[in-house]
Structure formats: structure tokens, C-alpha cells
Image (tube, rainbow, N blue to C red):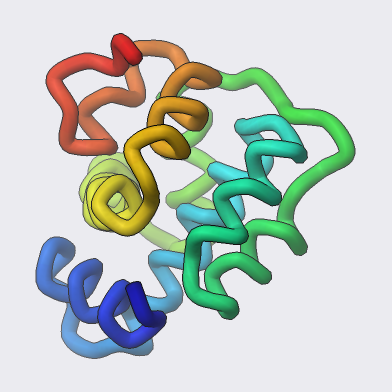
Length: 130
């Protein structure tokens, strides 16, 4: 999937006013996701996304994944976007459900296997059982 196509899907799902807003939200969500999954998984995911999005992931990845639940994930997204937690949940869902359709099923399963089941709804899944 190309960068513009990814942003167009996020824009549509999130009902954002333009691609700039969709890009801002996308970058925020990917930055937080990069902190939550292993550095190796960040690299694997980055390799399947359009260049600018992959770079956001790689730049945001710590040396070691951090463990935090869904509430903290949403708080961190909200902090980056200046939104309320409920809006951050909407934003994360728009980005992560798009991400799920942009990568291979195997890669999505690898990401999902590193997250608690409470993240399922953000990916547009009923559950995260591999």
C-alpha cells in the first residue's frame, strides 16, 4: 500500500478533515505502537509500510519494548495529538485497523501476539487470538 493510500484510508475511517490531520494522527499512533512492541517487530512492521510510516516507527522505537495496557496506550496517543482519551481511542482504531489491512497476516499476528487482548478492538478484531 502506498503512503497516500494509507492516509486516505485513515482519513476516511477517522473522518478527518484532510490528509495532514490523518498524517498527524497516524504518526502519533505509530510512535506509541513502536514503544509497545519489540524492536525486531518494529523493524519487521516498518519494512511492510510505506517509507515515511516505516521511518516514524523506527525513529520512535526504544531499545526495549515497554509494557503498558490499553489505557496508557490511549493516554500516550492523546498526549501526542492533544485529544481526549475517548478521541484517542477513535484515532488509534482508525490507524490500527488500516494498518491491519496494509500488512501480511503473518506480520499482523506477530504484532498481535505481543499485545494484551484489550487491544483487539483497536485493530478491528473481536479478539487477538493468533
